[in-house]
Amino acid sequence: MKRINEYKKLFGVEKEIDLKTLKKSYRDLVKEWHPDKFQNGDDLQVEAEIQSRRIIDGYHFLVSIAPETTAANLATYTETITNSGIADYTHKGLLLKITFVDGSTYEYFGVTRHVYIKMVNSNTVNRFAKRTIYPNYLYRKSKESLVEA
Image (cartoon, rainbow, N blue to C red; front, side):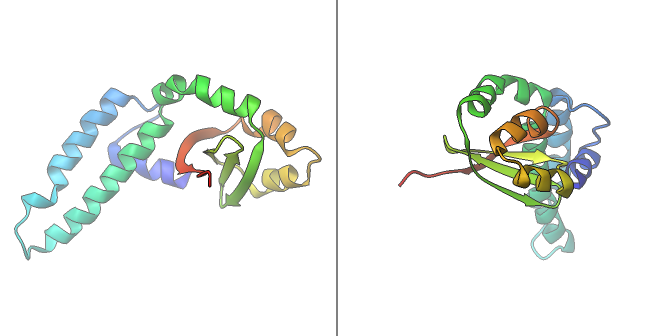
């Protein structure tokens, strides 16, 4: 959640993420912080490189959790959570990563340690996730995926 709020603040997003507004803000920030604007040896050139990477990462992250993106990928997501079992899962901070048998990985934001422990201790992890995790937490498809050998 901290990461989401940090990126929203960077792009000036108040509540709901609108892709059109986000894209305009992204373009403005890239123009302002593009490393080619600064001469070699300028102190701001190093800072501009760091800022431009942060802007690009933030943009891709916010696009991946935007309502339009979630709606566009809903059919694939529903297919995965309905028909694929959980192959593996990890929890760090408030981020729960679930890798499914079909090879896709999703990240769920805001999952507390208490909820994670309940999931681990449940008799059927899939059933717990379907009832508690999937409908209640913000998610995005992760870039990671299982590679079949």
